[in-house]
Image 1 (cartoon, rainbow, N blue to C red):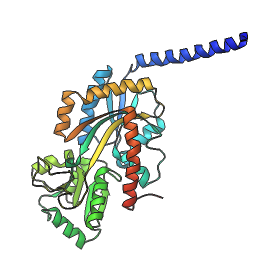
Image 2: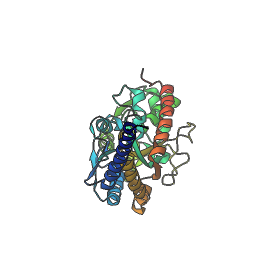
Image 3: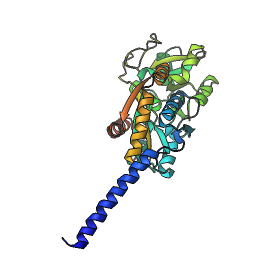
Length: 328
């Protein structure tokens, strides 16, 4: 072995050791300033409430604030698409990833890929079927879903409903139901629950498909009537309200939420964030709030969350193709 080859091996080993040292130092130092968490929904909605609590608890684990930044639009994908295009993969900008991210690319051309352009940090919560409801005004003409269906079939394309955007879970649940029930509805997308509920109460919509956090207080106050939920069985809170399945439509809703960052994040940084959010998800305060909001804890490691997203992406494509909504 020549002196030159020995020197090359030494330099290679030294460089590798230096990279490991830099990574370790970075991991020990992270975070040394506040972390921004992009939430792609308006402030004040049910998802926003849960994530703000989660961010506060995770921030305490990290020793730095996790600051929520609301960037609504495009069915819950605008904020994360901006993050993917512009944020540095240093862990200081992360985002809330929802089911719409796995549907929108099948519905329209996007400048981002839902798997390849993100680093998956952790799965955090899931919204189950009874958290999804179809509501109408209590003083309106529809006392049951059957009455709404009868009216919709007599006036194809005339009855309108609002949802939190094209490709959102609440949108596709109604599109799937409309196909099964042979009714045509006019879909009106909104950025989030508050403005959508104002439109319904004001008489500008026939109905709304949304998470329970958006309509439950209005149902309790008698302003809205809950016509339908999408659970596997009737809700314990509203046992008299039918599910889509109980009416003969095999449609059950669910939506999972998680934390992601831009692609290319340091694995050591991902582990720090993953550990902080795992502790936050399991915190008693977060568990109590999730129960109040009809959510369930759904912690997944970054690797497991990415594998789930890849599989779900293909399942969503099959559903959207069946509904005739698949983009060319």
